[in-house]
Image (cartoon, rainbow, N blue to C red):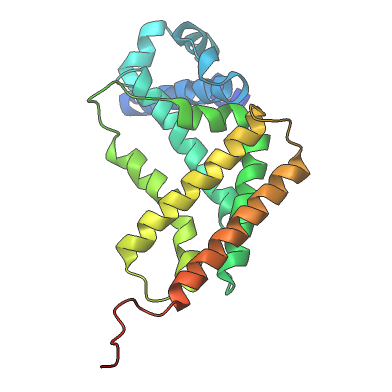
Length: 223
């Protein structure tokens, strides 16, 4: 049998077992919040609307989640998993081609799931409140998708340096996609945005290869 739809999950009877009741209530609240964020983004997320959609009292939200921050991060965790599934594919030998594919797939996901994609990056915890380890682990796994193709381009680079480079590349691609979708600088069609990403990745790859193949500045000089 297939998995239940959101409506079926929200209308399913609560189990008698206390732990089962709590787990199912948590899923109902999470499903309700995810549905709102997927269509309206963070701006449309209201606790009372979540409770009404989940079929529970307002206070029940805070018996299964510490606060709205944890609830929003839990929806974000689902978004990270969805995005990772969209981007993941068997590794290719050509590092640049794989980076091009990742960039295009990221753009397609952002266009298809724009409200929840924006919510993932717009949400901020209060100052001094750290991200939970489970969220950081999933986020870092997404960043890590660029590490393998970078390793093909820069064989022998230290893992720590490659990890930092992957984060930098992800941030750059995200910026291009965000500005393109917002059209704050200029109207940007999908083909234009894809062409910009292609040119950016190609230029970056050429620069990396050039630096890799450049003679060391410490090469011994003749007397």
